[in-house]
Length: 124
Image (cartoon, rainbow, N blue to C red; front, side, top):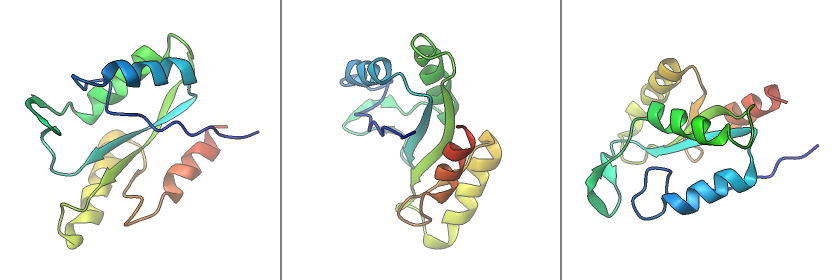
């Protein structure tokens, strides 16, 4: 009858904050999650020796860990900060991600979040 939105801190892959993210994932027992990323970023911010994992790796690890507390956990979208891209490249970038992963891919500032909200409504 309602959604609780849990904003993650860092990442399950972050060398300094993964324990916080793991605790949030386990404690919240989510039905759905959104992967967040930044276009063109290659390394974990502030940790130049740690490359960003692929979006697929993030989805897989989140589902793998999340299934321990909720076997029905699912990724419902990808949210990307595209501010590092030229404006004329943003739509194609997001469309490519959506095609690659079979999920809505949005920039909540540039495109809004309706596609992910629709995916959440469809998962109920």
